Image (cartoon, rainbow over the protein chains, first blue to last red):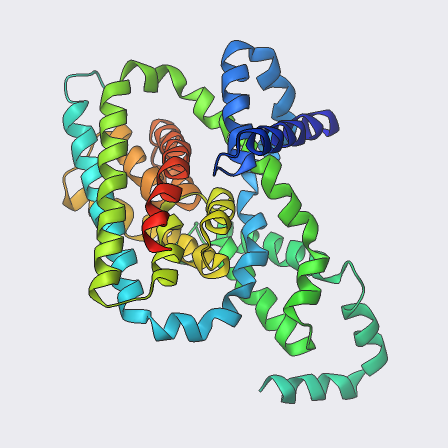
Length: 115
Length: 247
């Protein structure tokens, strides 16, 4: 568990290093994700080694959003000020994207056997 | 209301409650306890999407902080370890993608076309709706990372200059929409292929949608988590470019 967590943090730090060196406008943790993706595809052993920390982190991912979510109380005025445009933007783009993704992918996968 | 209840608790046992609630570990203990209780409740009631544990925990914690008169800053320093864990948790998102890699690679063209088309439609509707209402640029920037999984949305929001708190709230709302009306909307659109259903849920409503997709089937869940990660990667590249137009 601890070695797995250390590995995951190591990938994040490697990401930080790369972002700093290349000045790419990308979150360091996402670069770490891509690095783990590349190395994990090449070495299944690495995937098994990070699993003891990755599984509980992914299982309780939602717990990590509680602190920023609690700050919602401080945002009530902003939300109420812009309630109509926000609702339209969120509901509209959600519905549009969901239906288009589902219909288009189903159409494109039509000839492929269903698993 | 807050001042009133604060005062009444003060008369009950001012020193004890004050000491306890201002202990550095209090916020963390409160968050963990509320999350565990909310998860139990969610499980017992048959996983209703509206009672998503993260939503219930947020509300419970906010109420307790308000009643005890603990500032958000003090709470934040108590739960800083949770913010720290977001980094390795984001890195860990590579695993679901690796698991579904064989299926995705065999249909890579279909996946890539759907991903790019969906991203473009989602961003276009968002920008169009907000500019039609004359919303300011700051609000547009805040709404952009909405469909991205929260750990990535947070860092991405920071880097493009969004109001990250509001961005996280909008992300949560999108997730809950996906878990509540998502499957119903897909039924109306006659989308029955489990791969397409999963992908649509993951690309629009990330982790919360994915946990809903998992209740349909493992195929739906696998395609949903893959879509969530692929969408996060696409948006990480696309949003900073789009954000330049609103600075």
